[in-house]
Length: 252
Image (cartoon, rainbow, N blue to C red):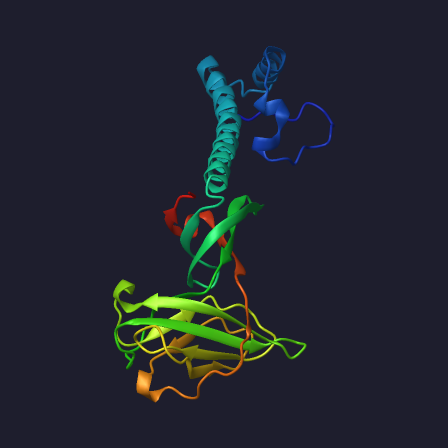
């Protein structure tokens, strides 16, 4: 099939097909002008058939229509994802964070980043089964995490756990979602009755470390916790994508 030769000295438009409005919005006058130009510049020995010209115009229209359909579908999908994300505000979810770690938290707000909805979670400390084998007996425990504030005052929070509720419990407990502190964290624990003295089971040296694994038997614990730290309710902020949400507990 012959090609249309240039008929003027106007500058060439380098825009992509999908963004060229004159092609996407081709009207009757433009169609007639294009057809006349095609007929005037065709090869006399190999004339263009009318159905071939119509096929060219149809292809141009299809390209523009496909691009517009794709943009429309992308907009609809984004709208649906935003609606789904905002419906989760106030719900507790289980998801994977940007580091691939499993987190559980309450959805506080929704933001859009790179065309994708993201959920801001308030993630509180929680106790789960550890990955390694240990000597922690089955039972109920209370952990108390203690650290020193910048003015020398002590702060702490409690984490309760019943080993019967832990999946794949094998003698170790991981306290996760620890908040960032100004210094090291000291971890104390009761015996398997959940009462009695709280004794030291370990220290987290870095204030930014967010997990601690306890594999210590009750009779191996260290010194008794002294003093009365100020109890706090703590949580840290974690951002996850909507696609990484694995479990949802709707808001009550």
